[in-house]
Length: 473
Image (cartoon, rainbow, N blue to C red):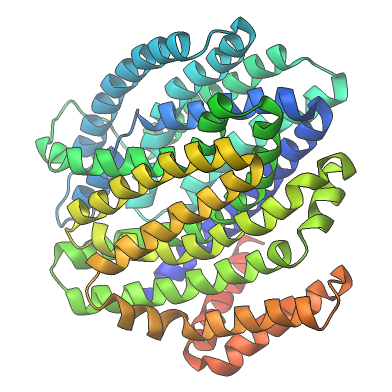
């Protein structure tokens, strides 16, 4: 098992993506503070729709590409050519469907304009960004795929910072924000042409089982965006703005363990392709252990003292969203467990089972957001998000073989340490934020004390990271 290479790639992804996620979150939160809940509600709806429609240009192709690219004697140049052409077709369809949806679903011209200026450029840019990122991930050159993500994050964040500096209106902001996706897409294609020739060949295997991956992939992208979209129809834009800002923090945080999962993906697919299920399960256990450790650790400060973060980042006018933040931060914990379980199914040729779980989760999510959001507004929507993740966890546990055994051996020490730290802060430290760093240190020490194997794995991770930093200097 090439765990050293996995951890090296994980360090690239973590360092690059963590920094850019923080910058992106800060820029969005400051923008919300600058333009207010209603306009930020409009912006949030546009971002949610652009995320969903942008993913339609992929629709699961990145997974089939990864599966084929990790096989022995794979012709990467032919696969890239096939991948790009299919994505261009999907993008054309996505543009047409988006236009019809936007003009049928919304009637206010101001809202339509903002959505359009962000959605259409995102669709175009995501085609080329996605191809480049998938190529470098398949080649296990995570540093280069991270560069593309960083360029996109920095450019879009820069637009938001400049908007606040020069007091631009939302209409102008949306035009520049959307254009950053096209710019990054152009740079991404230049990256690919430098490392790989794109021939005219065609590999039909890239379409094998695509429908199953498509259903799963679309649902993955839709689920985090359902809150703003459904709330925009059953509640006020003010509530949409409050929910979106509260959701923004955990939505950034849960991508951190998600980034770690990306490093495991190629190796898991290799074991799955070779039917080496012993090594596959062993690697899944390591992935689950590391991801749950990180997910629980980064969620603690926001669960323990949400008011501090809301007031500090947004001001007292947004304090009513603090309770929602505490609840929504549990998503980070659940996602850090759900990601590895889902990857276990996907990379062991059980994608259909994952799609069943995701489909049920989508139905649960729509119903939960609609009824709870309509009746209880902000807090109802927060609980809807947790109910969605809990339903996915139950579904994965049903389909993953010996899932209870896998969970017990992977997360028990992390979970015990997490619960001890939350209770200690709430009951003993009088909710004093000054003690949060101590709680974080306590969490790490408890896990290391309980779990010697995780300590050894993290020690190896830090050693590889240190070597990488030294070589760059």
